[in-house]
Image 1 (tube, helix red, strand yellow):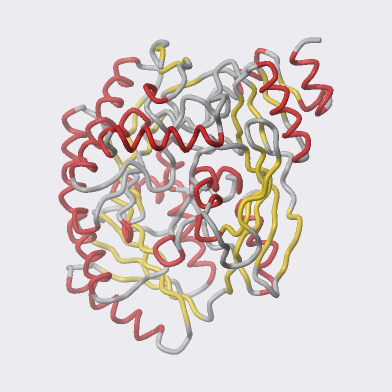
Image 2: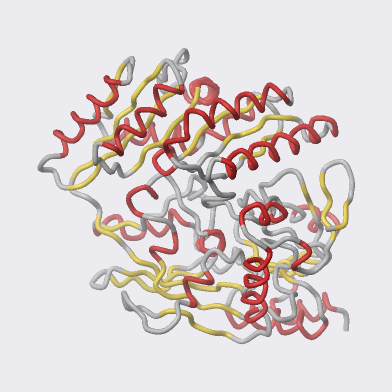
Length: 472
């Protein structure tokens, strides 16, 4: 019996996609510069089916990789010649426990659906990546996703209480528990952000938070990026902790306005979306302090959303902004480096210079409050020469951010894209320790191979960059 037939026995004929066109459909995620076709994509519906698939792969020594919605931006779900285990059918919310402020959902549940399920009772699930309308909880856990409200509420790991996970030998384990604090080593915290290299998360128990009494959402309009970034530093230095503090540059402002006609000032150099939340008492005073900081940095104007619809428009502009860049170029690579807030002005100037150096247009939209940059490089992936320049520019941006005391990723993950930059951050002995820890969970190396750690510390698999194949 072939491996395809064995997989069909586990999940049914309609749960195995192995035709040529189907394999091409799953050959990449949202990272456009590399691809790899799986042997097959399998769509289980239960944890037990995932475990059976993993055991089958282990028996035949076939690599396997978990996949959520494919919104990842670092090539973390590429699966060359292996079995891609998609959790899209495992999308149910299993339990809502409002008294203890927690919710349990399968790994394929879409992020925004969690908040929708509890919003009527005055609760929400705080992590809100811009892809939250499509990205799954399993993928969010794999990359420790953040989002605009990370500044106040933290990233995914701060909201996970327990994980159900299938280990690379097919054993089903639970890490963490449903209480606020656990004893012993934090194995669950170790698994969050491991990018699916420790096992496959099949469900999670997550912390819910109360909706706040009051929200004020402001739009600060600035003539220059320098004025906007200085405002970011000054707001935080004033002891104000916004729920979110996001920046859009002039390129993004224009494409968003062209797409949605929200009334954004097309001639602005940058805008800041500043959201404050908390108790109703005092929030207007806090908003006035923010206005004063903006004015001190030459803000042309500061608008305040006066209705829920106005606030929704501001956040739609932010969360759909990268998509609007399709008006300017067929392809886009979005970086995810993190720098100290104080370095924002000089780093953004340096990124602009990198764009000029490589004759590429780079737009910026990012989580300014915590220094999590998302420079978006525009190009046409069908042009090999442009691809080479994009890869060179990405190299320069990452080296720049590391040189400024930053790091490689805030929420998108290392994946394939940035794994060979890890030695710029960590000495060889630290990378060996990371490899040793991974081997405790993934001794065979079959679970999502070729990701996170430099290839000298992992297995050798082949991925295909745009413009030609290369062994990694």
